[in-house]
Length: 385
Image 1 (tube, rainbow, N blue to C red):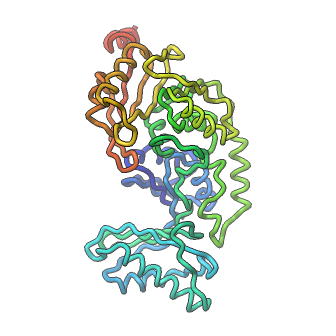
Image 2: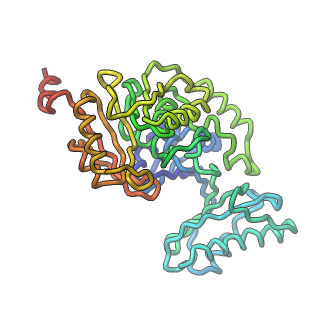
Image 3: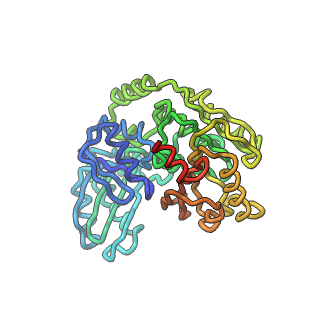
């Protein structure tokens, strides 16, 4: 069967690689989405293992509709009793870009009417709509007159791993953090440092990756668990396999922050995952007064943008970041994401890569700053020798 995994803009290639690794076939890459072939087991496994997926969708029907009446009729052709009972609740999420259907809310109401009318006629009772926590989440996608109906097998977004029970200021989304680690092509052996770790998302995602911990391992609920054809035996076996897939690792992962309370918050979040206990060295440390913990390694961090977290002078703050990296962290590869594009220019370091991303709704850039010992030319000559 066909499956669709959605992701954030810029992370499509990373997600496609993950899908291939867990057994997906016939993989096609689209804007913020990957289509692939799999079975029920792979759908469950996708929810358990994909680090950079927002959700995993099961397409039910694809058709054209040139009016609201035709949309209603085509939706009624789906046998909804295979997916929803009168006792279940459901919701509809519309994504509409159409000159035919100019009001997405009204289009979703037509789909809702088609579903409840069919089930009322068949069963004598209609299911209720629950927009907060439905048993079945349905997605309606319309591009001009081309319509798709999909079931959301994930339920809540997959970035909700279940470990970030204690929030920090402006925490980075878990899917984005995992995607940035993927984009950095970190080998899982090089020491990893987040010198402004906040609630700990980057080091926690790094520890889960290096120890081969499934990102959904502690999450208790997924959308497919409320489906009528839910196979609990398959899910329990996948969880069993995931627990035995966990590996030990000697890779050093360091998480620093200048706030004692912030470090404590990050530690409590990491403690939510038994499989990564002891993997991260948390320490209260001011980055600008710090020394690198190892001769070489990788830095991945999300400094303040002067949007949700304020500094006294954002330009000077980024200049200090650049100077600290330049003088104290030679031998490292630094990856910095920021939505303050002007402040990024004040780092005073020439990026090897600039990757456009979005942090929530904020247009951002991920920059790669190799911190060579001496000049780039000298490093190249040394490697050639």
